Length: 170
Image (tube, rainbow, N blue to C red; front, side):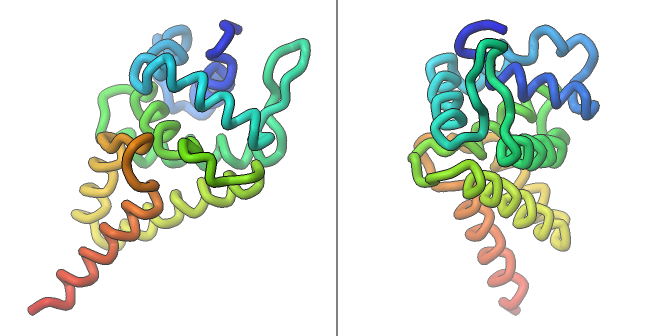
């Protein structure tokens, strides 16, 4: 594993197992994800994963904890939902990682972070009852810079509120 990309390599390995990546993306996924988010930010994402206890560090490298497994599963489920808005699986993985990284250090444990990731997935899944809104939300999720903007849950709640308000307006 390459230093600094260990967490992304774990993520890409799971994405490949779950069929999210094309076979040729197997080797390039970590670098592609890092390039899309920014190499300097990948270190921050990995730091937060370690800080929250999503992964543990050992001689063999990083290993997912139970909450880390739940977090990765939710992240990859989000990536599946976003894949229709991008060309390749690695781009969907990068968008999901961008959305579900604790950029503002608001969470205090891996369990909290895993629950939040699952909540974001549930919120986006709930928007499927409004097909155009769901497509709009997915489109924004892959283009939004969550490092500097509001949280993904905040964005989805605002989209839902706008949709519900427009549904009520004659």
